[in-house]
Length: 147
Image 1 (cartoon, rainbow, N blue to C red):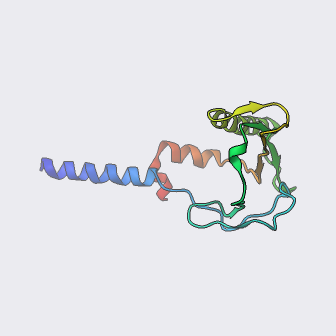
Image 2: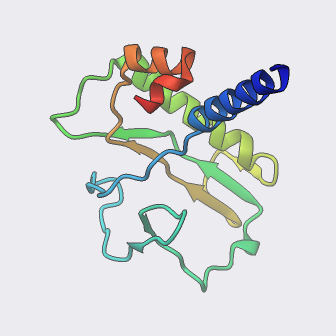
Image 3: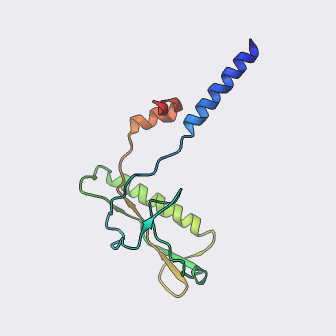
């Protein structure tokens, strides 16, 4: 009887873990926000890559010893303007800090362009507000994701 309960608890734990650690899905299509200006050189990514990518195999990144990080911007359509100004600022600040923290591990951070300085531009495109009620439920009860 006791081993049956142990097996049941083990299966329940495995179910909770597998539902709680479900993977995210990639968007099926990408709307061009205008951030890049020219999208003609992007190609479809494969596997776990981003949906659209650009790779320059002839680039010589070893010549750069510093990076200059531009302010992160938000590009959104007129139909998607429900995010408050405070949340937009928090989002752009968070992304800038994440980029800064990761790049500063291997590069000097520059405050102006110059020889050996790679310039980084980043943007959030089509940001949408979270479904707070839905997110609270799935954060508290992982099994709700299965529903």
